[in-house]
Length: 420
Image (tube, rainbow, N blue to C red):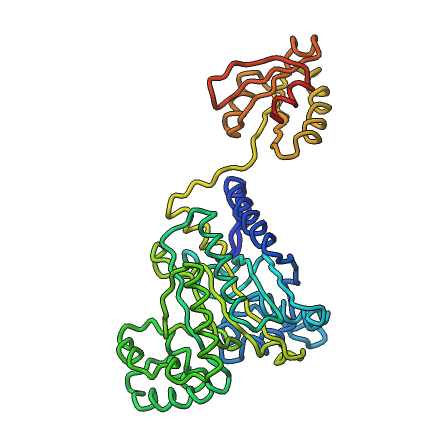
């Protein structure tokens, strides 16, 4: 007997029992973002490896350890996308979209990182991203917070905390980097192997360390907030003012630096304590220099990403039951003659009731077995096409979730009943 084929570790199937929840969440997100004037885009799963090296940074864990990359026969290196912003920026530059004015876009899809799979952290995972190009004011940073705050409310989520910080300008951060290197160099004997490496490549990432033995050292490190340039300090104050005006609570986390090199000024994370170590649901920030760095014209930009797997885990953890926004009809068709008629009726129901789910039974089983299947499908109504209904050119409607009486009528009257 041949060995059973299985999915790659850390790359999971979406099962039919979970598809309704995923679909509901994705529709809720897309409808909300569209209502703010954001347009949906799609970029390839595969990009030139250099796209991510230039955008994310050579010294990041993603580029150094986590990308799925390979060489083509012509020697060109390609990679599966580990995040969405780099491909989005490449698209903006290639099609010269910022020349048409401010670009407000969102996307959703699979991302890939070669890391140790664990709950809420997978090798293939799914993100929804929001990106704005061409807007410099802190007002757009606050709009992203307003949108995500509204999303949590729409989904019924609670226990989420907004953490914010500012990384200042590239110049201010370069000066701060020297101060940070000097500080940590004086305490090299307290740094672990990972932090010693980051000291050479990206010292700000030392703040991400989870090593409990280093926390006191990290907490006593000089704060970037104390070395900001004037424009960045003003931008951060404006950002906080907008959040206060919107009554969105936040905490300032001076250790929040994000894991990608392209960020400047505003950075933020929506976090929860309900998922253990994988507590970040949504994160992002400004990357005003990235478009130019990747070969485009100087363009201010800000964005965020929402991890869908973690969002679904949080909904499950908080036991939130999302309402199904569609009613459903299960057609009961016990005879061969009814099968042909049911196809005609199903066609008309789909045309007249586009917001309903129509189940047309295909088992040709008994009344009893078909009603069991209707219950299993959690249908709201059974539409019965039995011998008596066929003879009288009628249908019967039986409510399955209430004690209302069964009624018999013409198909047109039945459609009117469902519409009302």
